[in-house]
Length: 89
Image (tube, rainbow, N blue to C red):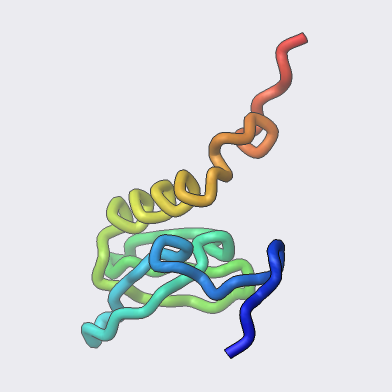
């Protein structure tokens, strides 16, 4: 097995994606950056930016919490520009 050099793309770790459960009970992981919408019909339906849809057992609120935790983990919410805030001058 080759070791990657610094800055190379590593395989996602356990906290780099969110784990969800399909209606059949099978767990899968999803990159939250690709989520466009999360809706309840009443089943929770996740639509990706690609148009792909996933129906999951988790509630809309549970998915929202997992996405927020994912964003905090990758520190995307720590950047004021990504949060839509302006610099104070």
